[in-house]
Image (cartoon, rainbow, N blue to C red; front, side):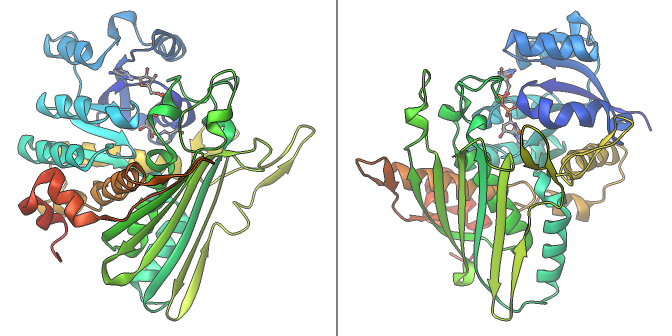
Amino acid sequence: MEPLRLGVIGTGSVVREIYHYLYFHSEYSRSVSVEAICDSNAESLKEFSRRWKVPSDRCFSGYEEMLAARAAGKFALDAVAVNTPDSMHAAPSIAALEAGLDVIVPKPTAERVEEVHRITETAGRTGRFFGVDFHKREDPVVKEARARVAGGVYGSFQSATFHMLDRLMVADPNHEPRFFSSPDFAERNSPVTFLTSHMADAFMYITRLKPVEVRATGYRQKLPSLRPIAVNGYDLVDTTVVFEGGASCHIITGWALPNTADCLTVQSGRLVFSDGMLDLWDNHYGFRETTASRIENRNVSFRTFEEDGMVGGYGMDCPGKIIRNILRFRTGEIDVEELRALRSPFMTGFYTTLVCECATASLEAGRAYDNGAVVGAPVDAHDFLAQRIGTAAAKEYLPGH
Ligand SMILES: NC(=O)c1ccc[n+]([C@@H]2O[C@H](COP(=O)([O-])OP(=O)(O)OC[C@H]3O[C@@H](n4cnc5c(N)ncnc54)[C@H](O)[C@@H]3O)[C@@H](O)[C@H]2O)c1
């Protein structure tokens, strides 16, 4: 099968951490060919083009120029990968779908539910494929949990607590080398969009529950104290979500753990049921190394680096399978039923964005204390959605109301 001809929009840290392995050093690399790239950051663009030998007439400073050059027949594209910051997913995705291209984005689908609604509507109207890389859905731990919960092994789900905590070096723009290409990433985004999105999606993937009410508590204590560049943002956010049927989940995420943490991302999940309990990522990942400089738990199931330079793991499998699905879609191998399932609001990340946007709204309406804590107000998910996309559309997504 011919590879998918891909235009890459945004060549920052997600490309450095995940996608350049996917495009060039994974079992999926034969299925994809990077034909053009764009990034508003000239340094990031130059680095990608130098390393992966993309000719200069296929490098652009913005997606509009890249799509215009493709429309003028300078090269061909089948799809784009939209790797821009969370708040900038919608415009390039919609422009590409309208131009007749298929689209893949890293989580979260978009920052606002209204944007997810518009993207998926555009994909439906233009008859194009739109896929979101929520890589935890391919984590074996999450996949097995989903299957066992569906099998009724543990009885009725009652309550859960998830943690996802990054080392401070991720959010700290003073850290050398800086983690994000965008210098203001941590200020313009938050642990909610960057991390809660992973865990909210993993939780809903496992339980298939829809959110009903969201309330968040945030802490702005470490990030504003950073020097010389301070970050006006949250260190940690505790989001409490009530789901249909009264089930609940606490999702605690942050990016201010001391850099001495034994893992770049410390995570855990405990789910309690009427007849059992499930602990996820217990004892980290089963690969703990001690070297002269540090003790580190490496998440080898996320990225598995092999001797021959190939990289595997669920970090590759999730976007890799989306690329293969786009190829199957283009050759008519995806039938109506499968397409409907792929376009469900769970799969497009609609409910995940709903939880995250409600958490942000909860904090915005919250009470701020002098010590930097903000205690948010409860947000009704259905009412919030109705205000954003109208009552009729909201009922389609949350019919129980
Ligand atoms: N970094 C990770 O490990 C990781 C993991 C999973 C998902 N994600 C998601 O990936 C997305 C990108 O995050 P990142 O960490 O790569 O951020 P980043 O700031 O490191 O990179 C984003 C890049 O997009 C570029 N950009 C911004 N506007 C643009 C435009 N209009 N046209 C072209 N390029 C533009 C920026 O210059 C920057 O180089 C986010 O949605 C993030 O949540 C990141």
